[in-house]
Structures are given as structure tokens and as C-alpha cells.
Image 1: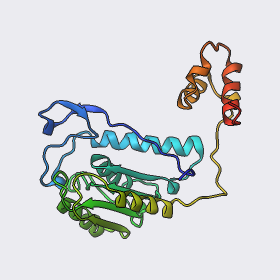
Image 2 (image 1 turned 45 degrees about the vertical axis):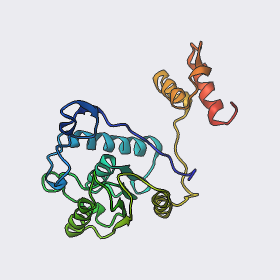
Image 3 (image 1 turned 90 degrees about the horizontal axis):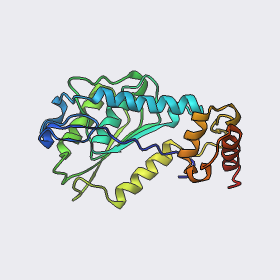
Image 4 (image 1 turned 180 degrees about the horizontal axis):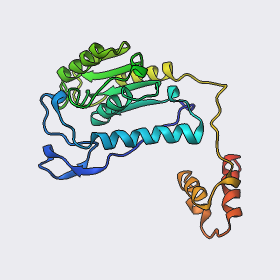
Length: 234
């Protein structure tokens, strides 16, 4: 899907109750594997805001509409995607959950009217011992009862807390259906000449051009490097 940009944030490292209180990458605290809807999910609001900031930046910097954005993830990342996406004030293109669930459903979640008909694809294995299928089914029921009208739960026989080729193909087809190629849209990139040195260096770093910038001192050199990269001259 070359017309789609993928942004892959990493969860912060923080103490997790289930990990005997030891720090590990986690979007929020997990206290158990039983009734997920009753979890307090300490830290989930902070993670939610981080994801919202990423979406806002894509919108402001590139001119990308929210309805051309999809939140997707596996396990806890799936949970955060659903929790964040369905509460946004802006309507998004869709949500993908793989082996996930709706966290803090009874304590911190309120479905936003803007996303009541947002397409949701929830993929779940029926042999998952970590996030049991029962939790996935409860999440679908909770969202549907709250007003979500486009929530699909697909179950994969024999699949544990993992993914398989069939699921990956289903996700690909779902994303292509809600984010088709739009030949009328062009990402709006800031003119390198109008960038600050800090912005130029960040752009060069993200493009993997750090080695080509070694020894550069003048802003004009950084500007030329970014322009050459965008013009396919490197």
C-alpha cells in the first residue's frame, strides 16, 4: 500500500502491576487478565493524548484529513487504538484491533457521536490465553450497545495471542477499502527554504540522510540536501 504512510509509535517504559511492578514498555498499567472492562488502566489518558498529538501533527503539518487516518494495533496497542479512536471529536477512517479489547470501558470510555459509524475491524483468535475471545466479544457488545454501528468481529480458529497470514490479508483488504488511493490528494510539504535549522536536521534524520549531512555548517547546505532528496536526485 504505497499510498499509505505508517507511523509506528513505541509505548513508554513504566511499572506494570502484572510484571511484579517492574518497568516494561506499556501504554498503561495492567493489573490482571480477567475482567478487562473494569480495569482502571492507570496512564491510559497520557497515552491517548500522545496518539492524539500524532494525529494532530499529521493533520497540521501535511494537511491530511482525519477521515484518511486509521488507528491500528496488536494487543495493548489494539486496545489503545479502540479507546482513542472511538472517543475522538474528529471522525477518522477506521480502527483495526488484533487480539485486543476495549479497556476501561466502565470507567473512562465514552463513545463520541462523531465516530459512531466508523468502521472497526476486530480480529481475534479463539484460543487466545492472554486476551480471551470473551473479552473481545464483550468489547463488541459494549460498543454496539453504546451506538457503534459498523463493528465487525472476525474470529480465527486455533489462533492464540498472535497473528496469521489470513488475518494479515483481512487487515490489508480492510485498510484498502477505507483508505483507497486518492489521486486528488497531495501531501503538503513545507518548503525547505522556510524551515529552521532544527526542522531541516529533523527532516534529514527521518529520511536516513544523516551520513550525507556530516560536516555541513550552512543552512543553505541542509536546504539543498533536503531538496535533492525530495527531487530524487540522491
